[in-house]
Length: 103
Length: 103
DNA sequence: AGGGCATATGCCTTGACAGGAATATGCCTG
DNA sequence: CAGGCATATTCCTGTCAAGGCATATGCCCT
Image (tube, rainbow over the protein chains, first blue to last red):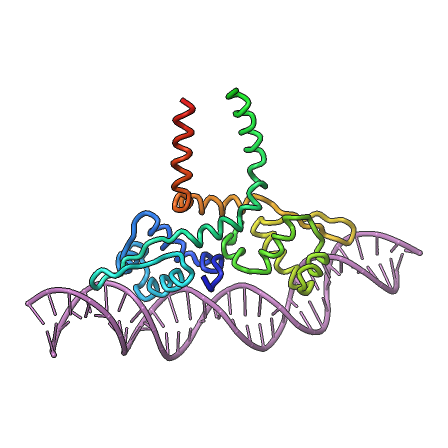
């Protein structure tokens, strides 16, 4: 993960690729078709995603099947974590309320 | 929030500003000093952050005191949510267990 | 009102990156 | 091994954003 995860996610097409791969692993051609972008564009984005660790691929004959890898997502989530209490404070209160109801 | 939250977070200096504001609200000059960047640079980043909703500011005499605003963070967290099960599968199992205990 | 501090803005240059078109690589099948 | 499909790479060009420097704006104080 030599490159910045946030910089990688800044590209909308790359997020679209990830959203697609989240549902099902896919070949390059499938992604290009579904997303309506050219094959070289998809390949280039996949390279960035791969070098950042967001995706991995296996080879199946002439096809390359890409799939999500979780680790960089964890990193992003980890950066986000210290901010989370900012908007969950009231939810925390709700949870405490529900907890007290449970007793 | 006209601009893309991920594009805003792609800039390391902006994340540093947010990390600083997360600890304490600060003036522009304080941020510039702490982060070691020029005042115009900080002001420009703050503008981007402000227009994306990540920060808000109030005026105190000649100073402008910036603080975090939670909403765009929620949006990022929301995008991340469908990926979270990728690395919390065992926690999901725990949650299902707890759910069943509640019955 | 004027001077000084804090912040914002404008201009300019530079570097990074995305996409198109063409081409290279790899693998399979006949 | 030749041809064809799927994918990767290269080259090129246009766009955009970041930072330095200079300057404008806003606010306070005397």
